[in-house]
Image 1 (cartoon, rainbow, N blue to C red):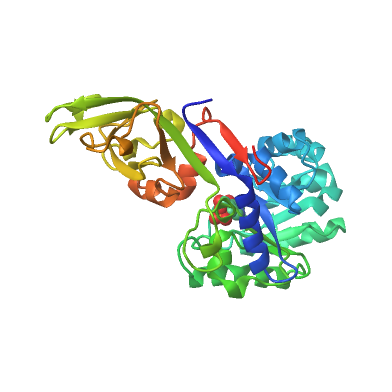
Image 2: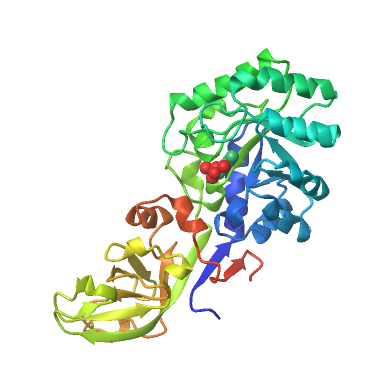
Length: 374
Ligand SMILES: Cc1ncc(COP(=O)(O)O)c(C=O)c1O
């Protein structure tokens, strides 16, 4: 068994999906966003669990991510967010995935290649993110190309730029722009999808029964961006554990780890933990982060620089009562119940929770549990 491992609770994943499905109006379902290896949780296992629970739509970032799901027997609808470069269209078609059209160029390439692929197209409109998508003044041309084929695209969609932390009038504007351009160019009857986790949670008024899908990512993994309902019912899916490799006494003034950026202010004990930045522990946690010890139920600070494969924790002087002591081999919680939340780790590392879970190292095995056991 690996020293550092991630426990993934698939029941919680499915329950979190249920939280969004219950809060969605009739007619709206979720598209489960499983890109980035399901935000570090393992795309194949998570997709299987979600599909078994009745989820009909998945989304990934790249064609390779879609191929991995298909190779593992996942036959549901998959939308690939990355637009196809013309030479890759045959691969999109062969995998039977849905395609994002982000420009006139992409539309023309698809129509020239196989007009019937329009039925698998999700036409992306850039309503304010300035990342991917057809800009509103060009939608007229795009609509003319689409109409000329006689096929109806699967969807028209956009991505919100300001949805993560609070309700924002700019999200409402983006929604309005999408509806307006669709209506103005004969695309009003094309199904729409707009909301991500933040948009869904913060904008109940944008959860519209006539929009069949909401693209939910981070919320599925129980990483709440806010405590607003229904996010208050989400449960974290991932727990990352490691173990103590060595415990040593150090005298006052002893330097710890590379460059001795921390010195013991008084005699103490240092526990060396078997996880470092190659496992996804951000190096920015050096002298800032903490880990949990489930046995004694305590939390202790990370001291000195986080190394590639290890980090050191100041566990204090030996306690009087040996029962609450920390010893070589003990389990340590790096993330999740009994330790810091993804949001706490993200705060220490000056980043967002998305990067913390997605950055879990490839060498950390994901162990899946559900009600049925391992
Ligand atoms: C286009 C698109 N839609 C939906 C999502 C899901 O967003 P979230 O994880 O905030 O729910 C993402 C993730 O970044 C995305 O890129």
